[in-house]
Length: 198
Figure (cartoon, rainbow, N blue to C red):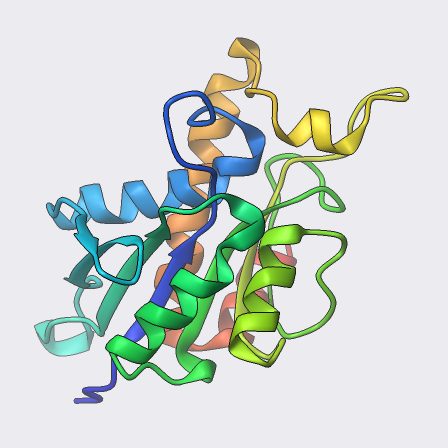
């Protein structure tokens, strides 16, 4: 079995003030992955909350791939340092690095996957690209939609999901978890075919 680990990063800002923000949807998906695996994150010297899991099972009942789940303890716009530190500590290759993040340019509730590309004004992605000296990591893009009217995009992503969207947020988190499973078990193309055809 392939022994090389994956790194799955959930982006968000630290602390309870930000926990329900749209900007923290990546961290919410990461927390659900850890919850389903029955593990609690531990503080790592790279300034991230880290847990090591096996993601699901492979055909034949073999344990799934080794995965390091990480959420930077820093604020979103300087999350690259912790991500690079965790990747270095666990010797994880760039092509096996996955970042879960909110995406304004995708309808709320929609999940898209890609490798590389621009950051679309996302400061967390920009920081990671700088720290990894590459944009060619994998992304699971979690659609939060555009702000209504003339609301500033920064204010929009730093506000909580409204209570009326609670069920849809839970569905988005579930789809994010499924997208990570598909990506790591089946590969990028198969995961894209499943989620991009919706």
